[in-house]
Length: 74
Image 1 (tube, rainbow, N blue to C red):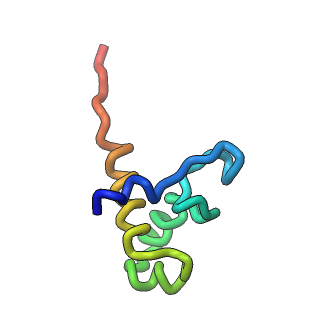
Image 2: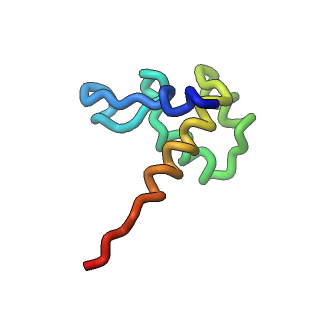
């Protein structure tokens, strides 16, 4: 599981620089949107057959880390 962050790539020339999975044109937000639509991990893997379970884990970890940042109050 220590390699999960490496599965998320950001390339300014791909998907508008949005975080993608392993250099593919599958964005982290695509995975999150499918979860939000009510799909479970198995259904997401069926919907996006190029993904692996660790890609889903990496997407969730990425999103959690982006949201868990300090807020500076002035």
